[in-house]
Image (cartoon, rainbow, N blue to C red):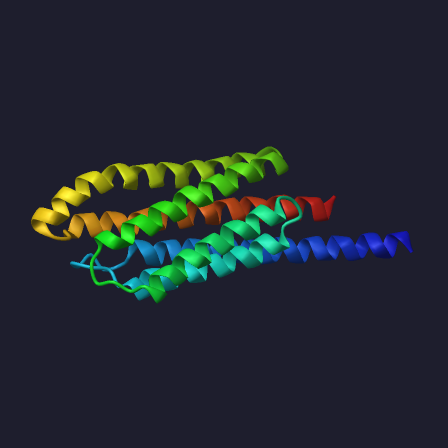
Length: 194
């Protein structure tokens, strides 16, 4: 009976690892999509919202598969989904109002991931710290740029480089999160083999 239970648990861990790996790859592909957002005078709120909702839902499912820090991983996905819904439900045609929810999303997400580090170990802890640090740094950079952007947008309106950099912030966060999920998957796979 014990061997059957252990074999079932090993299969379950392999399925969780596979699901987390697929989620990591999917979020990284969304990061590529975010990097390719049009660098016009504005980015569609629906497009940004859709990317965030998709990433958030994927991250929530991947978080529910985790064996450690599950609650925090799911919370990070929920925050991302809510940020995306905010974009979809409160569409705007100007760039400037969209920056504030992204800053809030990045800072809240970095706080959740920082709390999750207490429940992770080894390389997963390192990648959780990296992902939290990337989101914190991006949020602070956007916040610092917000005061500069306020003057630039007031005088010149939204500019292509500013909009393009905004898309890159989403892309970098998604890629860091995808890499974290790939590391979680790798560790889950190793545990299943042991």
